Length: 301
Image 1 (tube, rainbow, N blue to C red):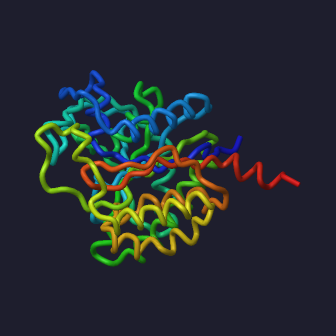
Image 2 (cartoon, rainbow, N blue to C red):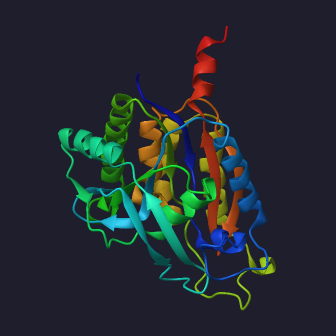
């Protein structure tokens, strides 16, 4: 049986969202906060609970590798993750299972396509908070194994255009590996959109009277990108990505959203936007692409 991607999502990872959820895995406790984004995640998690799938594959901008693309390569990782910028909000004890077979298949496909790949097989490796936050928010009971893909930072030592080309190849390689695996897979791009953020924190971090987008220009850029997602114009969105990344200091510089669009074959159907909101001034959208929408369009008269 041929494997398939059953859903893809833009799934941002501000640690504030887990902090505000007060799960037992996270030490700090919040009163409330960022409800619009958290409730959007709840809607996405509810949707996923109705879908049959085998694994979650996540591309994280906070596992940064400067020589090639790396994949988690051991069946289990367990430790304490502390956010380096917000240790007062995020101290999360994780216990994560990995689909190593799928990770190795993706690494092999990417390598065969000419990309440099490595498997992370250090048992003491600490999973980045981008992976943990996004996976917790879509599947808080951690009932599915994951595959985490690193961000090889070619935007910084080459250009955003080079990153886009490489992420196209990586997305296609991951799609081939999924099809060959026979598994049903959910893909997550763990990143914000605009990413210029405040440099000071409120005395009460969850004080929503202090929360807003950093500036109007960032907001306009975010709305433009979301408009293209909603209209199914993802090829145009990816073409615009380098300028968007530069002008709004977007977290798309890591390549995750470009990878996701490639793996989904550049959806020409409208995305479902579950939420848009700000966290410390950054723009965050929770967006879903359901490939069954494309199939529905193709069979419609």
